Length: 325
Image (cartoon, rainbow, N blue to C red; front, side):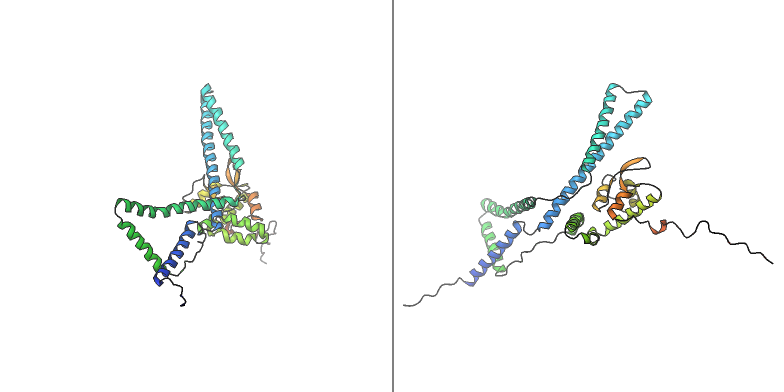
């Protein structure tokens, strides 16, 4: 009896089958959203929360400013006319209530802080990305089916031949399943997330990590604010308003795309403490000297050209005039 040898697939079929497997694995890796790292998803969630908080703060500030203008106008009319009609008085009371309501909302919102994120939210966001990508993958298949049904069966034949050719061309060369790096813009916008993680693990290296993650423009902004607040303290002021800081920066050609309502969020993103302060009788959001000192863990430093000259000693005796013989 002759022993039968097992049949082997033809090299063409084996090559095409291997290529189809590698392409299927790569497509599944992409469609499942596994090209995006967990860190990037976490940072995107944090960024979305920060932007939502900033939008709420801006909305309450805008509405409070509008109600304050309305109340001021009605009080001016009352002072000129010696009083208000009942309808206008009701509008004034409503405007005052709106101002107080938005001020309470701003105090409740406070400074935005990064809180713990449930891992299920990261998984949910990845599933949403996977659903969107799978929908994109169904479009070519639906196009082939519709084209074959409405036009001609040649569309299906050409599509099948193209897919087989792609599988044969790939052959036994698997794809490298990688994860894309986190975008630099996202790292810069969520630098506080890295800083807080560093504080929990290695508190002694906070300053080094802070300098590395903040970015060049954030360091420049912190230095500018530090000099401005130190100069204001030298003039016996408690701090500097955010509007004044923005005007100085825009006069130098910086932050021209920022509005006074949005600039406090920029300061907070650079870890500069911002709250409502009073400077020369004007109450608005700004940077206070004591809060900045606590954030820097040292006294704010003055720029060189504003450091007072202490070389001239007071009470120094003047030399006697030279008398000729």
